[in-house]
Image (cartoon, rainbow, N blue to C red; front, side):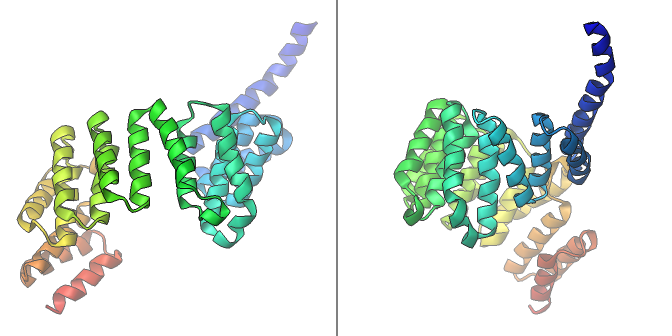
Length: 316
């Protein structure tokens, strides 16, 4: 008899799996509105399917529908208060809501901190939660709980889990706290330990923020030696063009980028032409600058920086 009942239930189970799996596929393909439409109806009839509820929250979050995402993830936390990932996602959308409306943020900072801290407590290996806490306690004003000491506590926990993440977190803290020598030290330690593109990118951005373009270019060259990515040729050209330094090197790298360009490089060739136009502008070569900016505008006609650069060139 029990087997017979199971046969009756099997089509319902299959429908449920199909709906959730299809929604998951929508999310992976960035079809967030399709996922939302499918799941919002499904969850109304199946509120205890926590996987479906979680995916619906994800669909809302990807579309920056923070209020809906907050309500959805809150439901998950209420269903399972011991799930670290539910607390992490709930805290994440609270944080995004806070960034969007800082005046209303004060009202739920307590919930935001609790969500992340509870996630960290429940999962001693949850790296993303600890990163969130590092950034949260650095960015909050001290009057509402901001604390370098607390931020550093979670950075140390990150280091205990992953040296690279710990070094990057400490570099971030010291950079934010205006201690550039220590920030540089830890970013370099991260490169030595891990050497990923993320590590190199953090140091490059740091040098640019410190107005040290030559150091940034040198670091990108080191990354290029290790990772052999064509996109790094563009990055060198970009820094050279923006800061008016090492123009010959920047120009050469941009031509290499254009010559070897494929879609996986990410930045369209039009931007490389724009950077070449900037470099020729720095050199006061109006004819070449105008030629390159026209090439950029032909490929991407509605980019405001391109139009602005052409006005600058025409006034030379």
